[in-house]
Length: 219
Image (tube, rainbow, N blue to C red; front, side):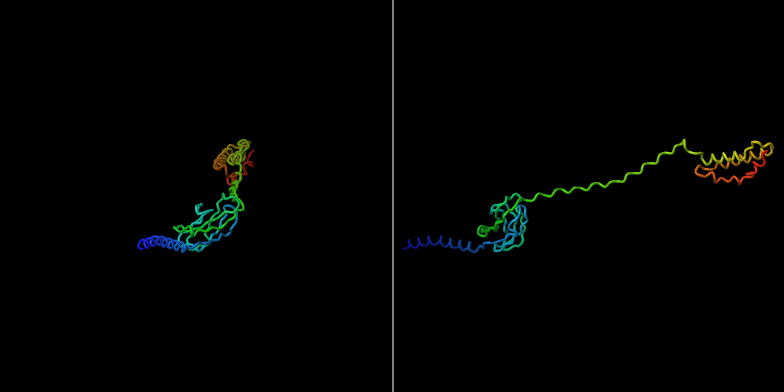
């Protein structure tokens, strides 16, 4: 009788453990989620919204629970978690899986299909830089003045006028010659004070005595 009780107890103990484990698994929720959109080109951006998971991290992977991680959400629910469909995904139906990361992750695992309908679009070409702004051409320098073509300076013109106006040619009176010579020298002295930028027309011969009378007194 005692042996029978021991045998029954040894059989019942594992059954209790199995029942407890089964009950623990039954308490782990299985999550669910949706993809928006559920189809598109490789490299597309997709929003994932899920619920019914355990509290804690929820890994979202490509193709299976062991595939590349696309994003990590936080359970028990989450909205609009952004993932990127792999750019090298071939056209056809693929799967996105989601599961908690704890010891009961297998029980919470679930998946949704995504149909790849084309290759990832090529990257845009690099922007063409604008052409450099054109600088206006500089004005050519003025040619140098030709010294051979330059006219007499105002000073030289004034001196020539003094010599012509107070010339003693044809004057017979010695005293008048002396006066004319004196005035001519004074006129030349004043003419030499002119700069080359002054006009010889501004030279005032009338301010000198005998100007205009020299020709009349000659003879």
